[in-house]
Length: 360
Image 1: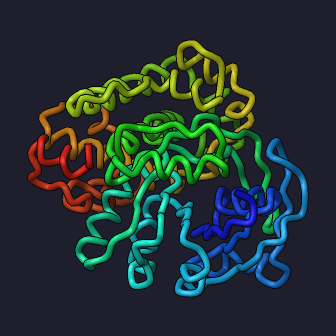
Image 2: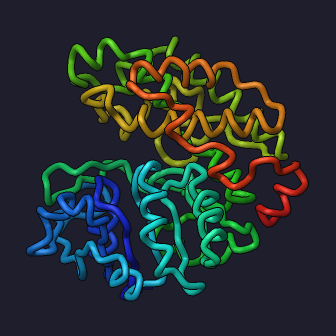
């Protein structure tokens, strides 16, 4: 509903795009970043305006509040959209937990299982809030200037899963006016296993590492970099992801079908979905190998999935090889820097106990 007060936590590409888009549609938006990253908001701090371009609308969005004061932001709104890289989800949890109450609904966009880590942290602090995550970012977008965002594509059928699962319908109903066409996953685990970035990015970046370093990302990643051989590697990762899902009783969509359902490209195999995509073929490669396409999607995506697979007896040799290979490329150990089953709060849980925990 227009005029609803919403807090967007984050200051990156998608946070800016969502803040501008929702503002232009009549929502009351607070844009909040951690004090450590106040520089992300500096270009808009004085005027509180973001210029929006692209398929979701054009205009100058006057953001209601731009702040680094977490207490102020959480006092204004009870719907919190956390739109940050996975490695920033825990710092935001640490900052927000003192001010969270049962009235708050926190949605990680996307989550990549971050809602489980937030749940473990909330439980440890004796706090309660409604937690949920979505399976991908709502827009294909970038900051095209320090105070400007461009949206090239809007994801249709954005998927959401809540923790506990019995709250998923309530979360979907709350989010649907903001992102029409919301779909429901069985639970937060299914949603986190449905994130497409860890499926596509690590294999694609590692197999294009030389070209990325040589050109500083000056090529179209999906159109030129995702060749048939790269597609085969991506599909091998996807097969392992879906095998983990089957261990929990999920029938996860293959990545090519998920791309089509999200509106990224036409129906068909992954090669067809990518090469027929207006959105994806416009995106250039990362400018360096110090990209969140590795530094986020390996330790917080693939490594987390491998740890889940190990606990429940699912072999993931391709994922494991990518995590191992990415280590020297990134300059740090993806097994140590990300989150595993301990951080997710499910270490040692048997399958039936986990299903009860997820609220199924």
